[in-house]
Length: 573
Ligand SMILES: Cc1cc2nc3c(=O)[nH]c(=O)nc-3n(C[C@H](O)[C@H](O)[C@H](O)COP(=O)(O)OP(=O)(O)OC[C@H]3O[C@@H](n4cnc5c(N)ncnc54)[C@H](O)[C@@H]3O)c2cc1C
Image (cartoon, rainbow, N blue to C red):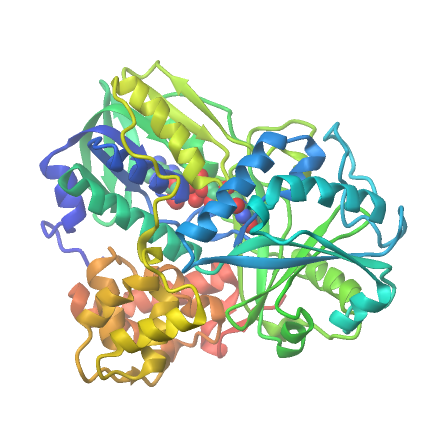
């Protein structure tokens, strides 16, 4: 443990020095973080604690889609679809540095139904039992309906329906058994973790001393109306008081309530996995689109270009949040099977996997409803049995985080007897402020900020951090060589992140402050180079560096099935 006794992390020290706030948020996934930002903007004194790293739960396991949720139409969840598309359209404007339009194509194998049909089960309203097959006619109806929710006054293009010949001319590697393709627009989120950090940073800036957030601090118990917080790096407990407690622990909401002293059964999460493939042929076959395919038994696969790799997911399996989750061989076989249906001539095997990840969706408790049909909508439940009102969040996707935070903040404001003073609807997020959207504006931005630096380097910082790249540029020395083992990154850049973004462990840097792990090829040598780059900033001695390197190697092996001792290959068997 590199935090020596008595040398508190500054953000933990700020909580301990003044152990009270109007609101305590327990859980630093996107929904807790967004609520923290919203309350800070209203001038509420708010504190947030996250037991691991920020955004290390469900929020780091998503399919990276900001989507209207066309599939939710089949469950009759019109409110959710409407809210999701409105939020998607807002995020395209408020976070253009990380959220971009995503052309999505559904291959359709039958007009009405058939062996490989059923890309959609639209218009099934009962939402229970086994998924049914649906062919082109119903998909068409669903997309017409989706267009009416989704088009944002014409900013988002209408869907297109193409016959076999035209479809294959656009996507020649696709299974020539298709009859049609349907193409519509949603949005992708390139860097979910960085987007969440931007939201957190905005909250901290807005609130100053009245908006405090610390990672590696858990909500561990409650006594006499005081919450016991535990610094997970030292094991030390301290009391914290708040007028309102928000439980935004995602899939762990019941477990947190239990620790606070109340037994609840709100959650019924399902597990989903993804693999990241380094596969140029498959990447080219997607033609930059998400391919969204649903098998006749209702199973879905997304094939999706991201950061020069191909993201393939996902599954939907009931899961116990008290246990760790990992992508299994069955899931990998399932992905490859469905990729094989869509692109039969392209060979995909385990040697192409450079990263894998799994997470649990924070879904509401469900009895006999099939996992794919469980509502993706959210609700807020208040409990008054613990001496302080505790609001538990049940559910909540990435896409709707702003609207959800607004609801949760409004409920909290009502309990505090306060009014909303600031709307987040059109508020630009972090490095999305002043983000140059057009190619020309982008060129101008790079020239203006290059200040003698290589334009390529400035551009890559703009891609990574949006206009917050300015903060990094100011911190970089004139001579800023890239690290031999981590091309594209310099020691000064990584060190800046370590200083300014509450990095506690090496994996915080490799998995969540950067995409280094995601794109693959992580070897022990590269991990060691990263540790060396941030060691001074974090005061790590040799022994600490070694233990951090070992921790990262074990985490990649156990949670992501990547063997960094063998060139970052996927562990088979
Ligand atoms: C496989 C998969 C694919 C998905 N794809 C998409 C998608 O494409 N688009 C989309 O919109 N949504 C998607 N989602 C859903 C979305 O990712 C989640 O619903 C969302 O991220 C939930 O955020 P959250 O903040 O509520 O929960 P979480 O991100 O899980 O955050 C809860 C946090 O609470 C912390 N915590 C738990 N207990 C305590 C405690 N006692 N003290 C302090 N902290 C605690 C946890 O460490 C965790 O970080 C997907 C989810 C999964 C799993």
